[in-house]
Amino acid sequence: MIFARGSELRKTRLCQGLTLRGLGELTGLTERTVLRVEQGKAVRPSTAQKLCSALSCDFDALFEIREGEG
Image 1: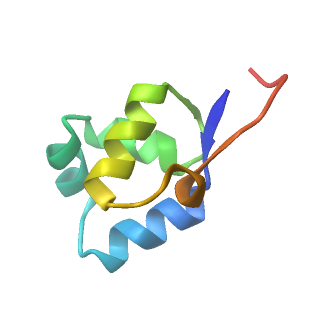
Image 2: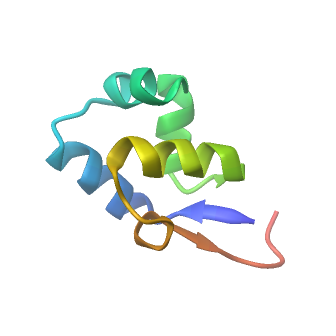
Image 3: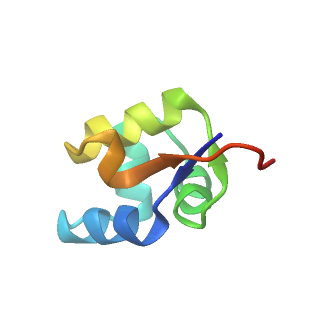
């Protein structure tokens, strides 16, 4: 399963001057979804890709894959 490195995702978002809503608008995700990702909930690969693209970051900088959780 894919999980965000929540503090890194939040820090990157804030450094780029984006609110939860702003990042949601860039990605087509809801504000609630962005918040849940930052809180460490499991995400779909497509969600991770959208966030990486919007923030211009590599997957490994913002996300990690962990086995056996869910």
